[in-house]
Length: 398
Image 1 (cartoon, rainbow, N blue to C red):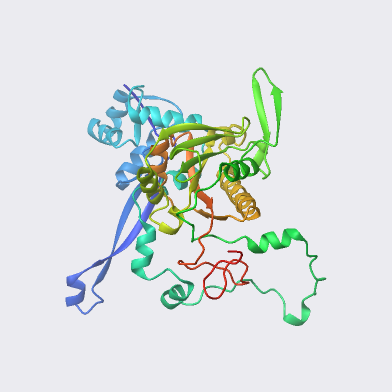
Image 2: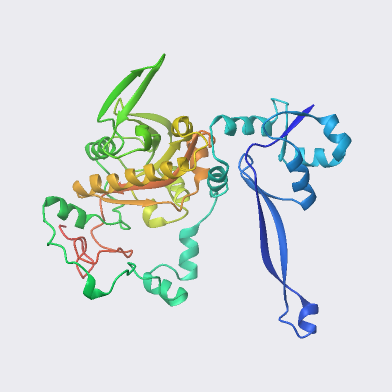
């Protein structure tokens, strides 16, 4: 058998405070620090406790070439090698092993180690943050300030007020009115289904191909133009829909095809099943789960990293791609007098499993949603200029 160190591996010394009775009895503060050494292992998507001896052994095993097990065992011993192999920190050349297969695929995807660790160890599964913040009393801005104190100022100051240079008044057009009406919706009408025309319009404006170009490089490489910018013009982000209430469209899971402007059915669901998945997807933020359509924004990393290989900015570009699309979705929905939202507080693992996505190929970074606003406001929304809601909580325009 041959071994090599897994391709992506970081070590973090993590310190925690522990109660110490001896310290308290001796007149101390009753606390002691405990240091743990953790291996951050993207291909296993977990943190693994290690010792200093483990780190030294791993440093002695190359990750770019295979080493014979017997030769390594003669120097480091048989048992320590097998222990690290069982924990996935060392990888054997058995192509059928899960660790070998996942490690190979991360290598082939051209991830940078820091980015891989950030992405794969930051994914949620089964988190219900919406309920947790309510229990903790962190729902409103006033509650946050009461518990955490004042936040940093809204803008940094680099000169005295007298030195500031006033600018001409901004030009006002219909676009400014659209921007003023753009606000995160936390009050969707659960009784009003979205029309297919509205669904099609938003999907085409945000994710649809506004133009294509086929490059002949020995294959047929299609380059898309969308209404949002994308690093390298690659547009690696796909739209996966949880449909709850769309007129004439069965509840379930769908994938949007940007060139054909068509939906691919992935899985049929009952209304209750779709509602349950929606709630779990947005980590029990019930006001977002009420949207008739939720869109999981999933980045196909191999498409982006095909150009930006092991690149320090590659993951940042992928995150920017999702941000651009979410803002375009806000504007597209607002133009149709619909509410919209985006959240990164999502259970990526559950979403990927529901759609059958391979997280080593497509990773969910955020979830958007859109639909008709409720007639009356139940949950707080940030609308300081009063473009959405009247003071009595009724919706303007209703």
